[in-house]
Length: 349
Image (cartoon, rainbow, N blue to C red; front, side, top):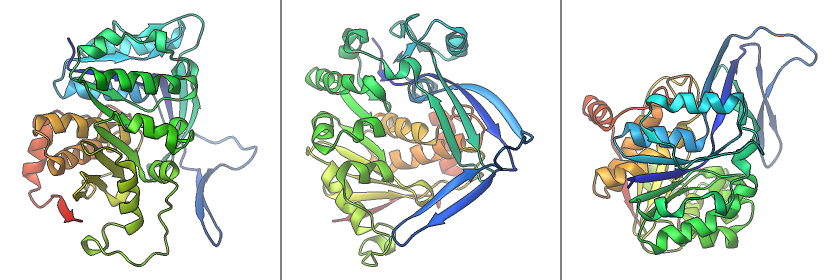
């Protein structure tokens, strides 16, 4: 029996940093966008280069195991040179891989991550088997016998397994944590509502939340009536709409502005843990999975779980890969003791 079962993607990630890249801002009356650009037709020197194994299923499984949970992972690989790299990576990670899917009919996921001098990244992704997980691929028995089911973002045809898997876990008394991705969210709120109804914890970033609810967080709104302008009223409406059942905890992350959690009566706000940013890849996976794991560790203390998630995420972004900076619970708690002024606050609604 596993404590946690994760379902998500597995990829070979190639990190490329070129300091000759430019950040170009394009602004109109109603929006602002930023682009990473290279001189067209040029040949540029790479400043830094690395290869690692990543993907939401990999990152979260490794994190849960590192936090001390008996963890089983479900993801789909091809039978190619890249799959060998993924499997070798797990040799010392203490994750049960007996339920993964491997077939010659697909390819292993592959991504090129272009890292800017600011630490932000643009990802060029080939989904491969990550977008081809089928219901028949899933070992439902391992889910039934677990304490938690964690769903990392799925894409392509794999989104079809979300509803039956979440429904099955919920009906069998398994706690469900969902970190929904854009492929699922683009199907609309009514589709997502069926998944949200069976989830105990839902984590989205601000952009995903707006896409799901269709409630835009307006940059020109000045009526910030909560917590000394730390929380936008439109963000509050997003939290409220996403919470479709009383027992749910809804979490929205907002990059460098911190994270918010809503239990139906209060909003918990946690600032970003201070530190150096090398690469933001894996930050969301680290935060979401650590938050869900910490709810068990802290006996459902929402505020403290936000702090734990932020500290682990902050450690991840200080390293180049998505899992190199992962901390144990003991290391997280030590960092919390070292910075006692770092804390959360509660806003009563």
